[in-house]
Length: 335
Image 1 (cartoon, rainbow, N blue to C red):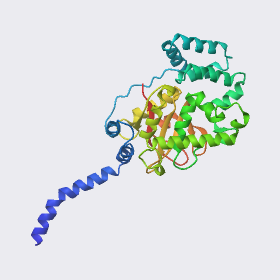
Image 2 (image 1 turned 180 degrees about the horizontal axis):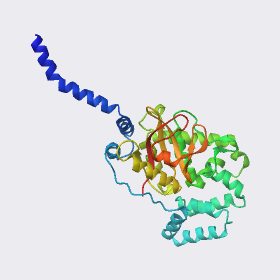
Image 3 (image 1 turned 60 degrees about the horizontal axis):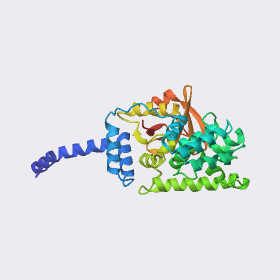
């Protein structure tokens, strides 16, 4: 019996060793992220199998990502103008020519964001004569050149619960790229002053945040937040406005340095970049919204703040934002 037990133990030893190795592998942060994000993406969009495979491979294999080059709103606006009918071209050019200099950058961004000639004519009428202060308040939820609290008329631009940080990064990214979208949030597309109040803004902000959360979490449980795949899918529904398509990338393991470099470059080009951070597990999203010298400008949705972190520390994989010190994933624009 003793001999038989020894033989069985010897026979099972390779299996036990393999099990231990697999267990140790799964406990590694990069593999935990791979499993979480792959499962999280199940069922999102028609190409989910390809997306999950790409994410899994990205965690293990060095990928050759090209540097991020996205056209400016003015360039995209000019390209769009060349592709529309002569009638629409004349309407847009006439609207731009008649607009005050302070209005034109916003009109160009609206046109670059993919809106129609009718939309730009209506938008021009809504903002005509408002002045630079009104334009900044109502068309820019976040000021990349500022710091401190992110508010609209003292109402914080913040997530409403612990699961919607990802939704708020999408909302803010879109509002930065599309003034017409921002105007809808701040005024409800109404000319009545009461509709632009802080309380009405907060109701619209919350409703849009919930809509985005529903869109990014069709199958993944909402109580667990949103996945990078879910964020990229929703951002890509608005690729025209954002000027690029987005893809989720790991920042741990092989290829992580390249992902971080592309995130920093995109932020420097004015392209917002959602970043998934945490400690032992992924827990929270922040949004890179710009670069100021050696610092990255970030929007933090939990406390509705705009702050700065060291770009070099970020490139080195180090971060310290509201107690989170581990970088898991970035959702970067692609060339």
